[in-house]
Length: 248
Image (cartoon, rainbow, N blue to C red):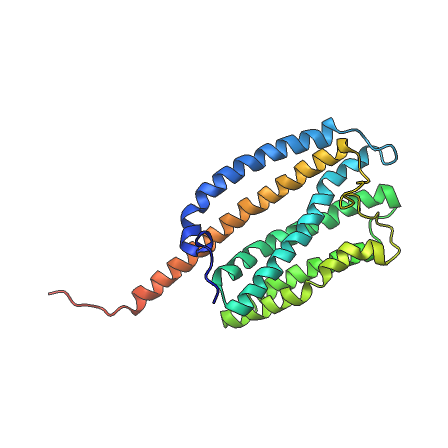
């Protein structure tokens, strides 16, 4: 079994997570303040989309987070399946509800953006459909992780689903290239010549970093709760099974 870095040991994480969350929370608030100001006040309207382009500053980061968190879960699940490292599973289970939330927000804001742009709330477009499948994968992971009485069986089954379901992530990414879709192609990953003006790129990046900070902050909080709950449960079991000693 791989010897994990000391910072990833459960006891070390439990000890220092509160301090880390304090600094991450402050940074996240600053990023949200900057990002929201630039997105809704400091950046110009689009020459074609007008003010509706401002939905992009929430929609695009949510879509990135949805794919990024699932990739994070898939990697942790593979680590858990191969090396049975318990913290990997705890991190994955803690991240899954957040990934589902970001995926739902991505679909919701996409519908709000699609209505004025495409004239409809939803189309069975390759990008939209694959993101919807991603939401089902998140929900499936959460359901399976609690489906069996045997915790180990549930965790193994959920981890297998996460690893197998990862194939959907590159499909989401490249769907606008592989198929003819209504969804616009990538504008940011074209490093040589991004198809987005700097006045829109800066608030978009600020919002993306703010969402990342929010994810890390909540993830640490959820991991703390799970670790404390596990320690409390272990202590209760120890007290229950401890032989009763008569006092004289």
